[in-house]
Length: 517
Image 1 (spheres, one colour):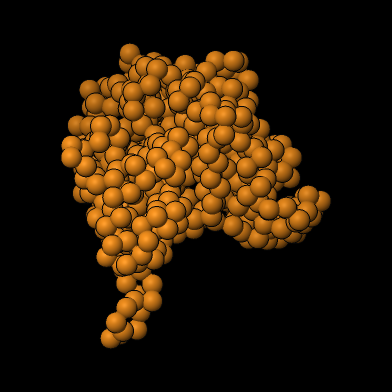
Image 2 (tube, helix red, strand yellow; image 1 turned 45 degrees about the vertical axis):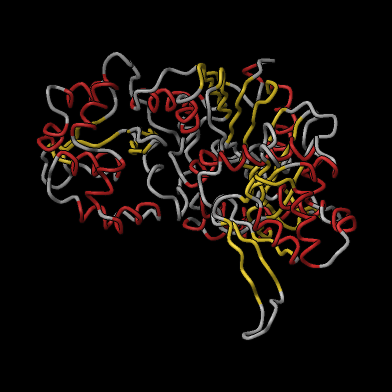
């Protein structure tokens, strides 16, 4: 199945004028929420359009643009002209953004969109727009149901997850590898002096150009090719990638199937990223990986980490091979076609997994930071619990704590100063009326929302950490209160302090020691 031609991308003409018309009609993320209401707006994320159609019956310019570009419904030429005034409708048709055709029932002229355009709110309130192929911007709960070659998806849950994970801040250069519709390149354009976006699919580069132009963002360097091949040996301060990570037999769908054996695409991407990062630079990936019979999945992932890089790898979900197969066959709409063809494809996926001794597939995040450390910090963990996005600052703080712990032995820890992280609470668990709790738990209400069990010394220590006393002096005071030898307490507590720092419950105080401490 082929894909339609794309609109013109003359930035000096059509795209800025369309943007102005969108803003004038309040065709923005905030405008959508206000017009549709929370329930209909949320339904779009589930690929349900009926509530939005009911909410846009008024015929206002905003209603027209929602139906035209977001819901892909035909609108009358008069309505389209009111929403795109001053000759913009004619120019948009000539430029390939829209098409005119007679209505099949009435014969009256109607207008249809040639591409999806979805309003998207930037992190600082920017009014952005994501362009993608028709039917690929609204929701996705039931899969896109398209097997068209080179189809380009819009913004979805994976896109927003990656954007929320990414460490932000001014950088000289950023690379969006496998850019798709350009969501990550758009985010990177806020902080990066130079943005490069690559994709194997030339249509994706065109859509990225449309997305940036409609959003009023600076132009990016657009390069066609696979993995790091288009950028050669260039290094970047930031690399982001939501790659075609699906582990499948063959490369049937460009937007999702990597076309390499097993999880080799994700492994190769991670391993090659180290040589493309500048010192202190970050690389963020979404990935799938195999759980292979007889191997620890965490050891497999640890082996991917390139030398000179710290890593934080988080497994968010695991599916057995039947669940995984069904997920992606449904994504392509195969379950709605010939049952026999569906069964043949299902068999092919299971044959592939069996040949590779794959028992399950993990989904998650991989973050690298180029530290150059002789003994890099590599944390591989399973965390299926809810988190609070955005996590970019949580990620930055994680690696800063690794730097601290790497350079502080136990004696230095005891000489250090700490504060309790914000939003940490203490929970005491035990039988009602009992004199002492059975367990004491520290719980975060921000970021990763971790919880950890501590003993009474750990709880007491954390509770008084306000940066005014060194860890050693706090332990000496606790030892006096509980009648324990302070030397023994100092010997056995650093491991617990180290764990609380590593998990983000305690934050090291850097700089000069407090006066009189």
